[in-house]
Amino acid sequence: MKLGANSVLFGGYEMETAFQYLALSGYDGIELSAIPGMSEHLVLDRWQEIVPDAKRYAQEYGLELLAIEQPSQDPATMEKAFQAASELGIPVVNCGPGGKTGDEESLKQSIDSLGSLAEMGGRYGVTLCVKAHVGAAIWDTPTTLRAMEAITSPWFGIDMDPSHVYRAGENPVEALQAVVHRVKHVHIRDCKGRQQGPGSPELQANGRGDIDLIGYLRVLHESGYGGPVDLEIIGAKEYPLEKCCIIAAESRGHMQAALQACGAR
Image (cartoon, rainbow, N blue to C red):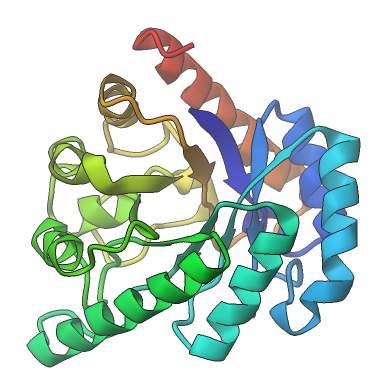
């Protein structure tokens, strides 16, 4: 497994700052945030001018470019994300499921949209991943399985985030076992309590919450998963730099220890 972090943790700073301090924290790679309002890192309307910088930072700081995250299913936006990923050699673009929990028509529309976008991604050699998201059409294991059954494209995969599954009332370790054969990306963070939001950034740090992340990583290891495991901490845009660095380093240490505990490192 490759340990990375989403640059959104450093959303209040320049993209190079994320590269610099994630490298110092010991990460293997980075997921580029293309999330409007949360960062100004990979701005998709200007991806052609940003790509050379991202390539240079990756080389300078020794970080592998692991994924891109942007939430929209808008086809024009997604095509820009796939184009940027292809140019950067990034294998995965993560997007949100959209829609509304408990609405059957919304779920069908989300699945149809994701199927079409996966085919678009395939034309660029990039895999589209989606995760169960509290409040969205795909929000738990049963709805994730519905998407997996309906979308057979090899360019579609599951992005598994234990914090959303936990807040959906499930056991993330058991939920992962049900879908791991289609998992191609992992967003990881902790969570204290089962409220709708993930909590403050410091409580999202691995080891600060209630989720069995050691068991979660053990399932990934025992299933032979070798893809990215990217820390995704949201809400830190106004944080001072030292707090962002502490969250990054603490979480990476927890992940490293968890992988060592299950014999993965």
